[in-house]
Length: 225
Image 1 (cartoon, rainbow, N blue to C red):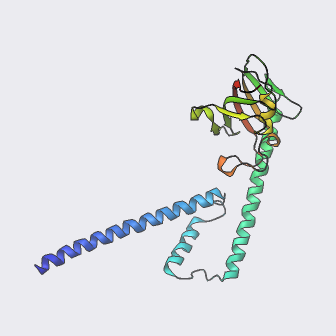
Image 2 (cartoon, rainbow, N blue to C red):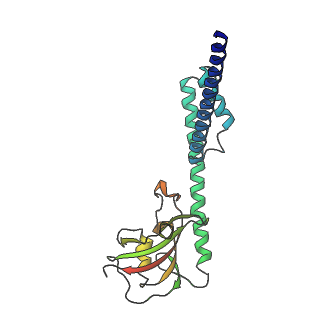
């Protein structure tokens, strides 16, 4: 009987060990995923060697100090890393701005594209009828916003519901552009960053600072002319 109990106990122990190993592996995968995401969000994957991060993680778990860095050295390393990341970020932002400027220079010569005094470019896809809204109007629209890469960052079409807002509540490019439209019309707006979000887009939007934005807008209704 004791042999049977001992055998059963060994099975349970192996099960517990297997479960514990699975949990440990899951924790490892989760942490690696989170670390990778953090570095990707910070655009630091080209600066940071993930294998070195792994060594540091193992170092922490084993309570060893493989690299023998004191607190001041670690602070210096992180400060240096931040400087490199800031430099890389600044270069990428300058690239977004440059791409927008180059695009607008070429796009204004495209057939059907018009440019206003402010630098807003637009293209009429469909003409509407009636009165134009004013800067104080509230409107109902369908729209799709894309980046120069073609990536869609916002779309009322995808949500299946038109949006309503006052023209004094949106970015300057929209305030100006939608006043050019009549109900039933459909335009494409090419909005330079000065008339969009400039250096301060919502971080959750996926829009980078100084990005040119492209909007396809359909004016459905003027709610208070």
